[in-house]
Length: 337
Ligand code: ADP
Ligand code: MG
Image: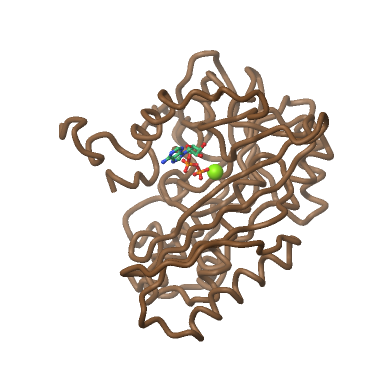
């Protein structure tokens, strides 16, 4: 064990916990501090403001050999919008901090912003400011704010015993897309769909709105670091035990094939692959049908993949062969790699 002297030893989530334990929220208007997909603050008796930030760093989050600048711009906004969706909110505006090398071509920066505007237009999110600095490689840090009606806000801490656990779309596809793009796996049928998931993820804001309207969601989080990691967060913040059923986890055929060619299963990519940006939510069984129906009207598939089974935190997967496996391995950790 490396010990806790360096960030590699502490890990990304260890570091966040450490900061969290020292950050006391004293102002009553701040409803949620560290620990959820967004910070939340009171803006009026019935409405809550949402605030989130996410950063993409060249060579850590993207490789310009595999993603175009227009897609990168899109993606930098998409990852932030996904956190607003995870709270059940609607996004309003964005601030963009750009760190770029001196010799970066202006037309490339134009492309980056074109991608940000492409997605912004789609969800009525306006660029309202930012900051510009010189950096040794490309860094894109976005801050997005939005709002949600108080009674519609969904949190990581809201999951209740007996709830069913549902997920939108399919999992593992973005990771499969990256494997295809980086040429680690040769192209196969369905490749374009997987690549698109990596390059132009679609934040589930419409779905979040529909879920809020239908009502009944208790706990929610977006899947940015893989199903395993996000189930852990839900479990820990809600102080409940979660059981997931491997045979129900929705994985596209292309993802299965990419996984197989790497001697993995589709489940591995769903559990530990990053960047899917689907919504994972819990709701009582009697509300789940209506929620599924509301998403189906948007053309979005929803799958029940598990259940909140106990009052003791922990995540268990029932495998296809009926074994129970503890799911402890987290998704991507920035410092542990
Ligand atoms: P997400 O993957 O949804 O963006 P993160 O795992 O990045 O969420 O963050 C989890 C929580 O920790 C959030 O509430 C976030 O605001 C907070 N957080 C992350 N990094 C820091 C930091 N360096 N200082 C303070 N809070 C942080
Ligand atoms: Mg999130």
